[in-house]
Length: 312
Image (cartoon, rainbow, N blue to C red; front, side, top):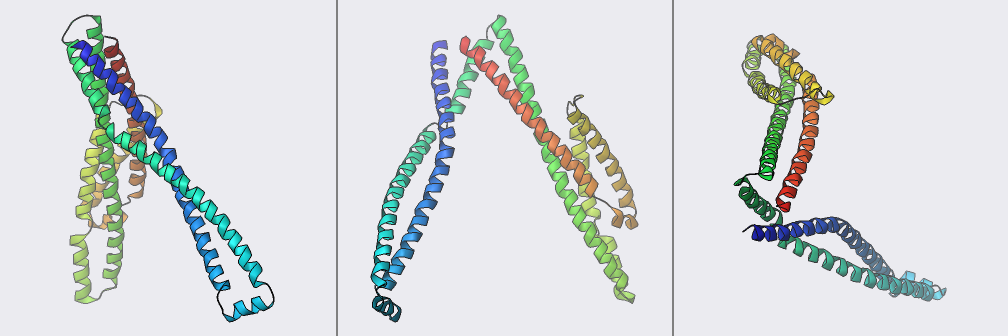
């Protein structure tokens, strides 16, 4: 059974490596193909222009007749025919190169399609081998158990960081909506202040009842979720993590100020979202960096796990 798994791992590993090589080769070939397409089109444009000039010269219009009388017509025709022949040669060569590039890209894409399941198949083979090793005892089994736990913990942390980042993006979206709503509320208040009598009272009442109150609550909920998830992350003493601590505290203070502003209608026009937006964007930048580093950690652990399984 072990030998069968080893053979499968070797097979799928070779396929994954081949897939990487093909993807690395595909990008520059596609770029070259695009350049060649534009080159052929430019040559075709030149051919059309020369052909149009030749038709004009070979016609029997007044301009053509005048040029013929002065002896310039035939020289222009000869010059344009020479250019036409030159561009036709270029077009033929460029078209042949284009066909070769199209064929090469198609071949790579076809082979890639045949390898699309190689990565998942390799993962399944590794999992089956790991299950077999973990069923036994010994130093290697113990080492694999430790690595498996590290792998699980790292992937779980990646999910938590990415979930927190998604909460941050939702918060940013609600803050931007609140900013627009507050600006509209200010405009409506100015309109209400310019109103007279019953009309002015109606507009003021509408502003008071339909202002940014609901949007503020969306922001409060998003703030609560984002700061709670930030607090749950295992942050360290490095500067980026410490800045996340600071941002969390700033956003919690902002949340408290929002509650105060929401309680007083007069405070709506004073709600400021720009500082909170800036802090949220800074947090998202830190979380993006953190997620990238964690993905590298997960990849390194996977390589250790694979090395153990392959030497068994």
